[in-house]
Length: 283
Image (cartoon, rainbow, N blue to C red; front, side, top):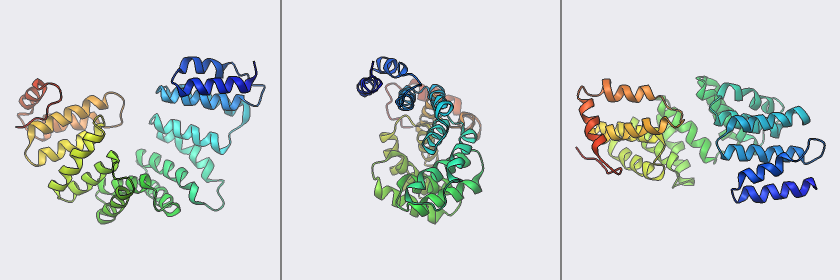
């Protein structure tokens, strides 16, 4: 019955993915001892692994109700809300941490980066840009911050040369990261370097085949070089993966397929749908 032993048993079971049994140990730890907070963090971790973000947030709210809200709890709740695409709700949790910082240090890059993402996803670009630049000021070699700011600039048609420089630096640090490779392909596409963009985006799709944004980008490049059937195929993949919960505007992709690009898109879609086993399509 010792709480420490229950915590250790839960940790071991969670590490071997026996999540239900692990949760039973963590839940048995009562709120009248020092291990309660750790048990709720572990329950939140299990819920997050199982993509039950709302349950994970509820466990962290238990911690707040019993133990108050410190920076670690604020960061965790903010991150969980961000993972659940509740960007505006996450912002106050990050702000609560930032407001207490007297002089920012290198390790503080993460809270500025996280809030910057939330601002960008909430269409508050000026605030987002300021936070992302602050994150890079604190940690100039942080590849995710380099990539996010560079991609955002490129996607908005801003500071293209600087965007390419940031993404190149990120790719030097993480040369096999599919998302950074996608960013490189996208900024090259936006600057008219189509053949180079195609090489990067095809590699990105191989590394992260189920990401809707990457498939959408590859579809755009295929269309621009006249490979229409392959473009339709990639856009259909993007829609399929987006329907699994990813953040992307499905209607925009459907509009590209059915309206903006070609009056014969319906026929092309039928041709693409007849292909089996994910074969690469050629017109």
